[in-house]
Image 1 (cartoon, rainbow, N blue to C red):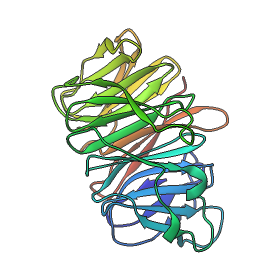
Image 2 (image 1 turned 180 degrees about the vertical axis):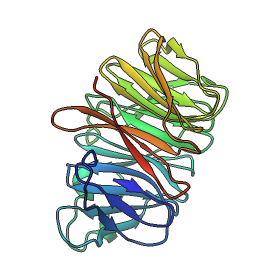
Image 3 (image 1 turned 120 degrees about the vertical axis):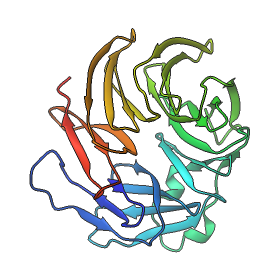
Image 4 (image 1 turned 135 degrees about the vertical axis):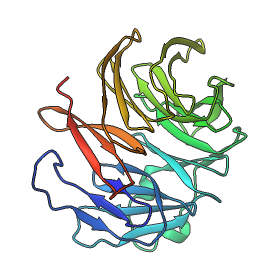
Length: 284
């Protein structure tokens, strides 16, 4: 799924094939800032006006079945675990939602409310990622901080701040992703860092970009980072650069990784100069 600033959302089935028939979800002219899949068939969109929108993608209708105000400002990132959906916003807050409450149901919009609102960041929150077991949520912000939240048993106890890594980059944190039990962070300062969150120690820095990091993803023991200038670099966990190439010739907004049944593909998204996105066969 690819979100646009003024052209809604396009969903591509098996985009590695040459011929596709994308589905166009046209909800409004509000910019789409973030997307996440929920239970494989529901698509959650975070919008620039602070709203969340949920689509049923297995039906022919392209109507948004939930549309509700979640934050006061733009929803910059979304994360999904088995039980929770996290939304992070320019309003400095993180919303936690029970995933079952976001699944489409008739006349439910008025009753949708967050399980919890997390406070602590002092500037806009840009990214989030659940740990692989869903017990922890990492958030990154323009305040240069990485936070780790304990979200175990959210119905039994209030989620709480477990660790805070203050000033861990020299500029905004733009992205974060888990690789095993360790956390990766990408920043506008052009660096990617690998953190041991049990000790709050940076165990590796990945240096090589000359522009802000706009996305990071992982595959096995490999780190893949995308610069705003379109440069894509892959590394091993020891910080050794393995591959670099210009994936896009101009400004890039985001990159993400996904897998088809047989191979590994890396998709990079460019929302400029014709809203081009590219899919790369990674073959790892």
